[in-house]
Image 1 (cartoon, helix red, strand yellow):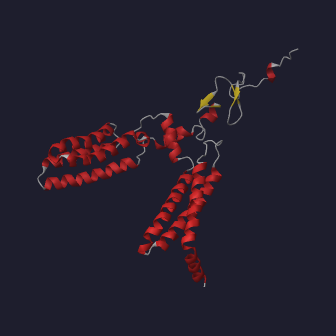
Image 2 (cartoon, helix red, strand yellow; image 1 turned 90 degrees about the vertical axis):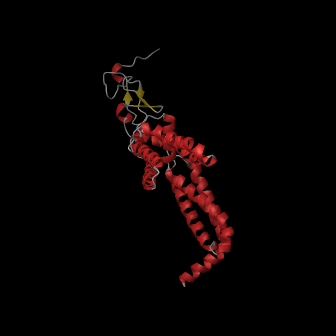
Image 3 (cartoon, rainbow, N blue to C red; image 1 turned 90 degrees about the horizontal axis):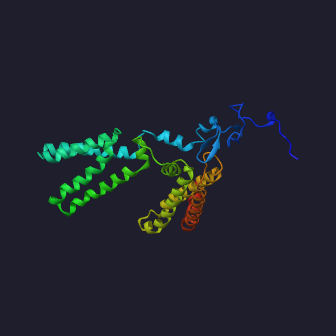
Length: 283
């Protein structure tokens, strides 16, 4: 025996009361019809929720960086200033060919800083041409231009740099950049401090002969304590179900583990002297 449900009792779309609801928004729980159903990053939302910054957090992140200069742009403009000084020196020395090459390279750097897209390819061409032109006269030392060429290749491929030039990037690369820069950055900072304190722990016995072992131990323990605090805060923030999700649990735990190890060995090395120093300060 079937029971007929009155049409008035069926759920209706919050935006279109005349349409039956086919789903619910995963953020606010409101009913949505087929026309209103909006998918964002694998989840279903109503139209008002779909445009909220925390829902489509990758798009919000992209717009935040869209057209804004990154570190590579400032690096390039710094090299551009150096090239201008070299061009001036070459002109004063009567080396007009070198001066012209430096000025042309500086022009590419300035165009890159201003966000002209052709300069991305120009940045690759400058060290490559310099290496090819210098090879006949310099020989093997011309390979020194291989280093700036590799830097230019990395800048060309960098997701952050492409956003500066207002170039579309795949969602996978955008997510990777978001994970690196925006997802619980405290955990990353804590891990860096933890690794740094561990490196100082290794260097302390080696530099003790210079009389700076105790000072390094103090710096080590300060870094380790800061890493421990930041790691604990970052761990408390972890919430994979949040929107946007907050992760890096293992980085926070790793930072705390490294910090505890550094503090333990630091006290083993200079704990007695530190206690004496603190006791003298209290007296």
